[in-house]
Image (cartoon, rainbow, N blue to C red; front, side):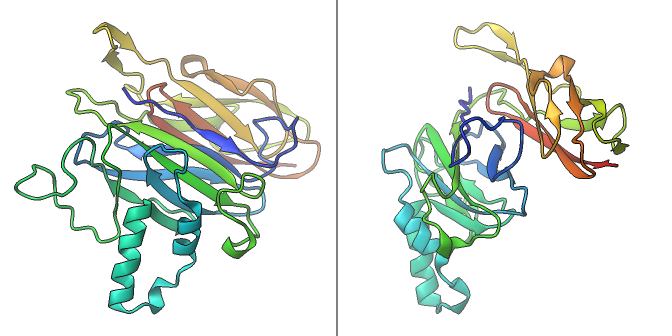
Length: 293
């Protein structure tokens, strides 16, 4: 079973509604596959939002000691101009990046990493692990569980303006993934639509109350064996976020996912997010835009 945690920290006002996107937020992190076996290559993606633009994000994969990650090393790696390096300098930088678990820095990245799990660290014919040959792919620590840490810089600021790891200046999110060689590994659920009063795109009046509803693909709620060998069925939940207006309820069961949203009293464009989680580490999301007149 995958253990999923998504923790965030920032300098937001104490009483800000969690569903209101009024600052930089790491809302969700997705791993594909969500329950990797040792030797698997995992593709990561994140839903990182900011009302003022697209934040830059530093990605790190590591185990869970107290000093995970080494932010000083990550900041130096992220700031390096790899395009101006010689081949020897680039090789040294890549070695340092691998040692630090640094997966990349920028906007909208979907880094990949080789999950070492509890097996041998190097791929090849004598180990049974794949030799990916991906020079830009990081390698997760050798462990039955790994942690991916994201550090997002608010839109309008750059790496030189902040210190990575400073929860007062950046938004930090973490995702824990268990590595398991399961016969029926968990799969991510799929959100097929996010409707506004039954429509995929909508124009609403100022102050108008409408319904939001996320729909999941068939099979998104999987059956699985729990720790006692008993068959269980996932009970996915949907979390809604908005950039304006008011939500009456923001987290609901996916099998009855309709909520009420009241548009703001001012005209403009509002973004809506629906994030589904299956409770075992699988996640998916959709984003829609509404025009308020």
